[in-house]
Image (cartoon, rainbow, N blue to C red):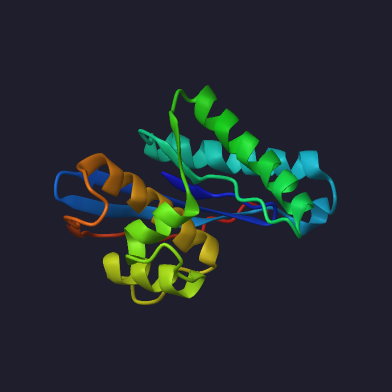
Amino acid sequence: MGVDPGLNATGYGVVECRPGDVRLLEAGVIRLPRSHGDNLPARLETLFDGLREVMAEFHPQAMCLEEVYTHRDYPRTSVLMGHARGVICLAARLASIPVVSFPAKRVKQSVTGNGNASKTQVQRAVQNFFSLACAPHPPDVADALAVAMCFADSRRGPPNGWRPRRGSRRVSRRTHL
């Protein structure tokens, strides 16, 4: 299960990995209600509950995240994302699911072949890989699927070798309001 943390919307993607095959089981977004305003604990509780619901349905073997990236011009954003990431790690721990982190460049390299790929390029690569009619939207969903794909890629060997064949998919837009 790949997760792209956010305090407004958290993308998630659940894939099934088998030798030579990665199938998309579900992808969507957990929306954190604007009615919570600046109430960070309420937003984090909504995130926690949404993750627990997805984990209870799919029983993932691993929770995959991008490593935290800090931009010198936006240090507050990193701290806030750290809160969301902490909730994700706690939810995984309480479900006895290991957490695996990857640098953003590695995720992009694994999915697009370019460690400096744009969000649009990642969306298109995910769309093409899973034969989706349109690019996953919002981009948080594509990012979550990219992390899950990177995990699948890391389990089978070198990052630029074999590519799993395209599998079936089920995409939803789970929203928690």
